[in-house]
Image 1 (cartoon, one colour):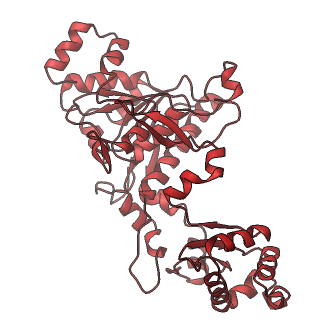
Image 2 (image 1 turned 135 degrees about the horizontal axis):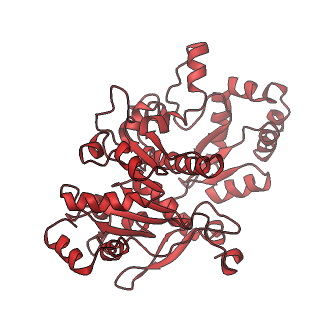
Image 3 (image 1 turned 30 degrees about the vertical axis):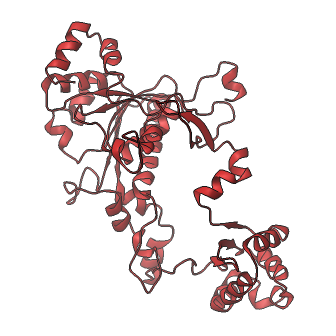
Length: 404
């Protein structure tokens, strides 16, 4: 906790009410960010099991460890959107919210009577973040689209992997997470417009394929001007040399980025190659890239002569950017991760202590924090209903009728 918070400062999103109508990754990750920085996030789940992510990947006593993190700082309420009183509850909830985040397929909320026009009439200042595979318009809008599809259509999969093999994915659902970040950014921009320019609420329309496409650097102008289609190149990046991953004598993998002119010179000196350090044809990136196969061959051979620790020590001494390729084992032991408090200690319901990721980004005066882990399904339903004025007997009747 920062000194600012110790002295009573609020988190930066304190006072915002966010309703989440989302499952799995894109919508829930978007609201997770908001909850970490002080927003009141109310996650609406189906009474019939809730968010499927509760059962994804490694389970501890029947619940996903991922859920503990993805659901942190969120209140869980249940509502049956097929039940009229369940829908009425959700509509009332959204009427008092600043932000709604949803990742249904386009048209689903409209069929439930919870479309933008209806919600805007109830709450003209609402910011509605809509995350979907292809966006709310266009010929593909009604098609289902997960992050993997967005990564493929957005261009990322095509350029990922080695040229003699099919495209590969990254090891995480990066398309969903990128879309979630754009959703959070868009929501905050919309709020800024309301607060500073006196504007009304609006829709933030994030398509997963567009979120990925936005990250594709120079792909569009290079194709349009030169007809250049970027292909898979493994660990190297043509046009930026040297920057790649190499295998050491002890079978470890080290990433080296020595594509700066002065850095390359220091790297060659550290390798014992003053001739290359002084070679004027290698003094700039264009010259090095023209001889990239030769340069990478020399680096591969040099790394293969030394253990990982030796390689990293020599490169650190020469001030050449480098790193081992970290696994979770490396992260847990690394002093930088520890110094930056990138692991927090938490407790599971049975009291077992375990580590969860720290909060990103780090704000000096109003940092985010973990207040509680992912809640039990419907844990806050009664509390939230009571806050909307529902009497205990009516809450009991809604539950008995299957509305919540």
